[in-house]
Image 1: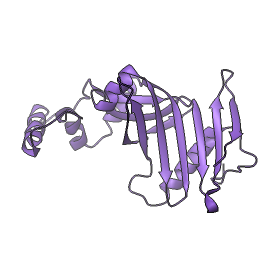
Image 2: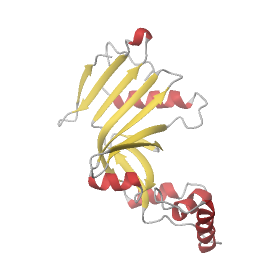
Image 3: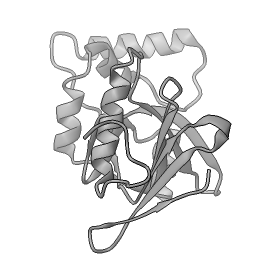
Length: 202
């Protein structure tokens, strides 16, 4: 599909538009064109957001990986609803995805973890993500201990590290235009495997 979505006659399949826009973003030469803001709600009902990297996208949802004991991991344990926001200033475009989050299989997590650089694999073990650390020296010490532990052998995936899949319950495409009269098209998944599509006011 052409990356330019027809906002007057939006296509029936939003996933194809997502992939087309993501592909175009990757041609811009950005360091992390698949970076997005992930928003979660903690047990007290307070929102928080951070940047994650999209690693897969299909009909089942959008996949990212992280430490499941991190702040976002703990939030998702108690409230498994989240949103992802991609924004590319150079294209004046954004995609918002909202849905329910579930853990990907151990097999999927193992397969992706095996593709990561060894330093990133070591870091997944050494970093107690989101927890306080005394200083940089303490973190470096933890890294050295993990390097010694796995010296001369493959680094296995930590049991607390893995992937999440965000279901495609709602997708909104935003195209920035002059006078702030932007184009916005909303897709909401139905129980029948189709999409309710409507234009939104800017």
